[in-house]
Image (cartoon, rainbow, N blue to C red; front, side, top):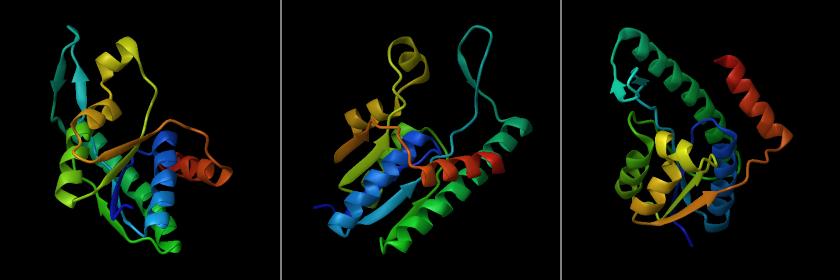
Length: 166
């Protein structure tokens, strides 16, 4: 069984489904749950279509709002895990999700990574990248990619409540 499970959280229905799967695994294994919410660095696309990182004050404000919103979401998920007696560690680093998920999994000594999947393919996946694809190919431990997006009414209200607060 698993001792430490890292679940990647980004406030989407996909990551909420991943949280549920990770919580279920943690309960079965009496494992610790690592909630990882990566705050992405804002990226602009210039007129030539190349990615250009910009650290203007406006983009930093967007990044800070993303961090606060993700923090509120993590608060709620942590509370749910603690209610069912699951030990929780929270991390909220800044950067590119794929490499950070793999690096934190190594650093934390996790033996399972759980993450959701947006379902992009073809050109969209190529242009926007696929975090789940990156993690599957670079992680040193087992990876569970949760395909489902069905959420319960309680989960839907959690997503909606956090979206309204933004």
